[in-house]
Image 1 (spheres, helix red, strand yellow):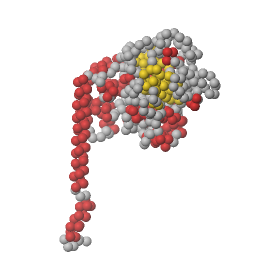
Image 2 (cartoon, rainbow, N blue to C red):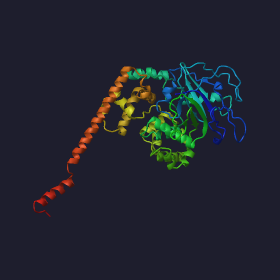
Image 3 (cartoon, rainbow, N blue to C red):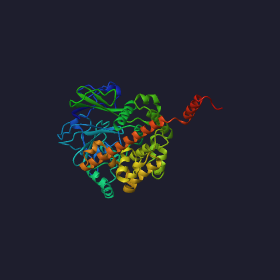
Image 4 (tube, rainbow, N blue to C red):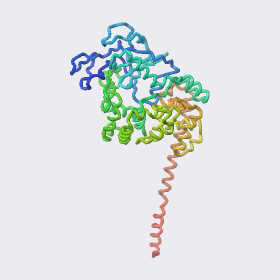
Length: 464
């Protein structure tokens, strides 16, 4: 956890080499232009109300469930409601709001296009602010609001969906009460594609690290936020995560845009390996080249056209990319291409299906395409054309980060089931090991014949 006061450093409009962390800095000077860089101070940071009640949007539930990897929790100070001169050219907009008090532990900070954006969850709504203010356009607030409404798909009434899902599934009804406001995001398809290519045999922290390294290596540096440390771990992470630099008294968070397809396609496979992608380096390099040859981002965004592409056609196109199988294709289509009834099947979803919907799946030995579709249909039959959204809510309930929000008896039931699953897997593993030992003790056909020949030779002769 980090605490105030942070210092905003850097701007999109200045060369990277002119930006540096210098401690208690309130402005920087451009070496090329020789004028003071306008850095918004925290008291002048303007927050706007997204006007979304808790039942329609909770930011943490939506951003911390493994559907995106470009937002991080940072404690920003409250904006003062006291009127004072701003250091920037533009005055605070009349519709900016002041948040006078808060029991919030942190804000969510991430990148939307080329804007560094903060999201603050309050008891009655969600507020947003643009941190890098790359220009002082009057309509910036309107543009950013529109982008966030699109990203969170706020045109979809979530309260009604929760109600209909709860009628269809008693268990989901209890989860819905414990985890309100969870939405499926509508992300940039390019970033989403490469994020889930990196998700192969991976976990959320490692995927996030890989994506941060890609941004830092090939994206555009937007700004830094230096936050005074709370006295916790100050171990430098610069060699691990180039977007989070820990220093003795501060943590510097560096924000980058996601690179263009053209830039990613020019990078060599060994460069991606150097970033720690492992075998996924080939997947990323080849997929970037394929996407560029197809038309880049416009082509991928075009897969959202429901008149031109059916669900099956979208998945077929995605699976042509190196490293994209059924689960990755479902994730990309669900989280960025408007295919809201898709069900990415992983260990958690398999457990949900076995435990709650079809116990016979426990007897299945492998996840064949037929079984994969069968699991998806279990969700689609219950939850309809937004089954992927309902799946995301149930998926969140399986994560440790949200477990404490669930009713105690539900947590106990989940623990019992996982213990049973673990015991069953251990028993199966031991049975296979025992079977292998028995097989090794029995001579194979050739070895048996050779052994028999030796014995016959020992008896005084051999047959020819």
